[in-house]
Image (tube, rainbow, N blue to C red; front, side, top):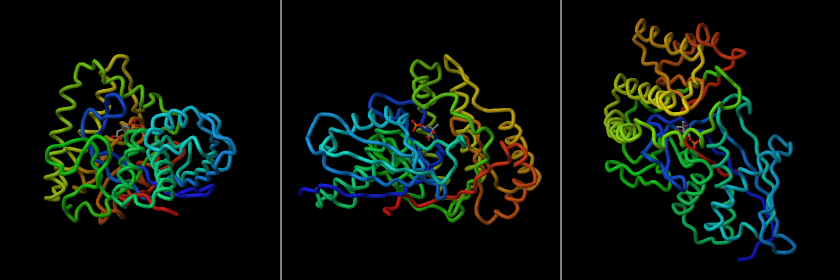
Length: 348
Ligand code: PMV
């Protein structure tokens, strides 16, 4: 099949891990399995235009725009990504690519766009492959896109499908593997349907520790092997929780995972504190509110100061009121984003 030019487009969401991935081996292989909620509103929309080069050469040729503005500062990351995936997409050097991307969340929100951005780009590239090789099945398509997204940013491989995705080999999760994310294959209790995630933007600055640096901190970390073992155990536990709908156990597991992620950063060498004073204010207030009201509100964290407030949809009115009345005061410029569990990427 020869194709000279075309355009493909995907929207792909962000995701928030419940059991965290922190620590990797060579070539983006995770040290432990992780599981995440796919988000719905926080997403990247990417249009990829491609045109056959006039003369074939041995370099990657592309330009990148974010919100229609050229972003030469993104080039090294994409060059690295293309180098990693070229073996799996042999057409890569035959085309010139124009990558036009935008996020539904503000760029400087402290929300990492790497998961949504890398998964959207990987999906666009596999769409081109599909045009060249129409035999690619639906399953092969999604697995390959997740595999490639992983090579861009590990957690990106969990963004293509929803509403729960597992990445990393686990003996009790059928199909789980280190190379690509798989949709959680078991029945999930109604308590977790439409789970809400209100993201409180405590600090919208650049990440203090890049995830590459962060993962590397787990090499020679004094608690590394215990942590990796704990994540395996927590996947077993969350499997039972997701089936039974035990919200109390869910809250304990998810909050412990968030604090453990931060504990790993506080106990590495060099060490980092990625929470801000307002992160702790919010956590303490969530705990006292839960004590007072008995509502199943909980939090999780990424590798930064922002807080993801998680709760079942049926409590949205009460919890959103609490967030607006009390927690928003701890957010930078009062900013927060209402999101919920979503169902993955869409071709546009
Ligand atoms: O995908 P990366 O390399 O940016 O790593 C992200 C890791 C965490 O977001 C902190 C946890 C996770 O599992 O998503």
